[in-house]
Image 1 (cartoon, one colour):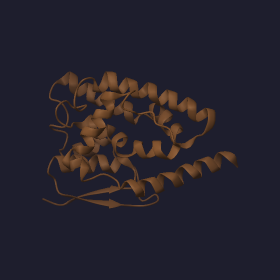
Image 2 (cartoon, rainbow, N blue to C red):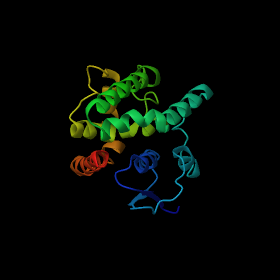
Image 3 (tube, rainbow, N blue to C red):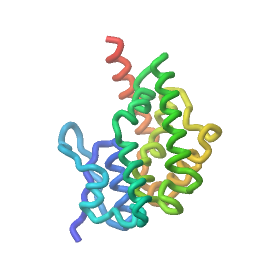
Length: 200
């Protein structure tokens, strides 16, 4: 079998999604970091996995559950839905407070409607929705450190907090997470750049 190569720009979470899926399926792959505009017209997450025949059993067998999985993946990737999380990262003052409030409302929805009482979004095993939500476990804690505001805490979101612990502790995920210190430096520079652009 030809070696699978995953192209991604560090520390974008999209490449990690595919890398995690490949590892979970036992497919050997090489993760290649690229810069600038070298990555053109990226495939959607589901399209990329289907291209390599990796959606089964990451997608639920039950038709309704499969449809709901697709719904939550689209929900997470929707730019309008993601806007509060982006604003939480790149703004300050009243705008940041507003973004934090909106982000917490979305987190509540994810905890109660998407995760519920399950160990993973996919049930007892990591599924495709867990991989789509993986950015939250991989990097949101770093973002909270940088902006000095904790919104995804154990008291407010016990189930999401437990999911993050379970997801990060899974051997495949644990061995394929972005380095915390490097991520902190990279994201700090990005935030400084955005804040500087709003004051000039």
